[in-house]
Image (cartoon, rainbow, N blue to C red; front, side, top):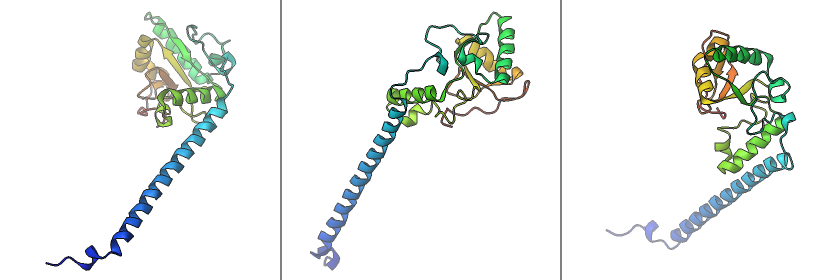
Length: 199
């Protein structure tokens, strides 16, 4: 059997090679453009928080500082949503009767502080996609609206997970055992948790 003309044609081989070369060049250009866009986005986040240092006025609760829901002179507590605050105070009172104490590790946050946390997470995980699983953007964060509170220690978290619905309080992210919001009516059923903050 003789080879076909297409397989042996000296014109077809260089044409195929040129097409393949153009495809490879196109893929390389697309990859470079994607890297450039990623660098620009990262630079935008970095410039948004450059020189910013969170303070108590932004909702920062300094590491090692013990803050409870009764500390209403602390901005992170004072600026919580009133319904969330009242529900959490009732839950805290009932948990205290069982020998448990709540400690607030984070409450209300300013948009600048939230952006700073997001940028810090992007640098920590070297991935914006992974960072957003743990830190929402300021426009999507329930902390910025005062509708979320992070509670410790673990025994308080577990108590709230089990009993929080009595007060309308629910764990809302499956990957954040400490993050609670008022997500139902007192005595209601908590909605299905989102996988993470990006969901």
